[in-house]
Length: 409
Image: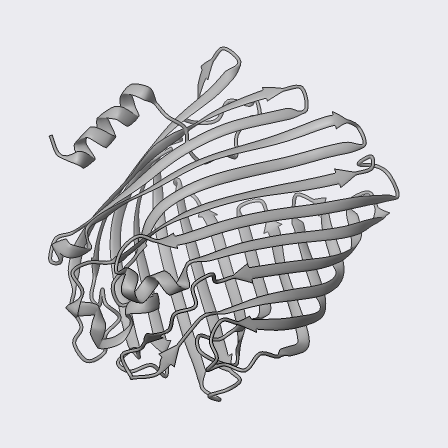
């Protein structure tokens, strides 16, 4: 029996756990009640064609792709506390490029715990075993089709969000803690240098202006450490080395959840960054500037919803200098008569490099149309297009993906 067959069989026998949003006792489509637990198995099957799987403009290669996503969720709610365990896998079979077939796996746990009406804790931890498709990240350009397979990695992370103060109090104090460990698993002569550990701690104060509107004030502290001191060579001959760095973001903003029609948050402030380079080829230093992020949800009608996400961040560039990332993401979901739902989305992103003065830009468009066969079964088609313009050799590209899918939920 093939490995993927064993995984699917085991999933259905054990009905593991996946996608943790549950824990409310309201029974949802596909949910099974097992005493105090809610159990929801999930299975998605996607069949698609990608006309440029390596993002190569000079030598594009297309492939039909079969993807199977499976898993489930098991969740427990006890008074105000919630606990949930999840497991999922994504099996991708590239019929015209077997080297790129892979099974990604995800295991996670989340909990919401309230010691009393003044102390609330949200905790999550995850383990991810995944890969980067050839032609992306460290294999952009002509190198993609010379590799024996995709770059593989595993990632562990954990996060804790603590709030002190009653929900209806005038003000709340908060502390957010995050940890991440990222490690490459193959092609170590070129990838190991990018293994990293990341810590974040963000104290904050939340002033209640009205029942569902808060003024927020936070200081986000980010510490990123690349332990390796070696350097590697790119496909265009430049010596590069990752840069460890510390960053502080001083943010003020608004957060609201007034009605079912609108909710969101907007934060703006200043960042300060200090670079701690492992390479003598790169001079250490710091920079500062404007930063912001926001997400807005608006439903003018019960069956029509809009989402907007924006961000402006700074990160050390690979090799030298900094890169400024700006992202704008807009989506619209509309439920039509006869169980039909459409989802239209677009994203625009720019990356400006301070040292090389190059600007990388990319746009993404998505159109999704699905038909709800049952409350727990969707049948749909999807079109996904990317237009990526970069300064790296052979990395300017377009990609079109056409998909037919059936999702059980």
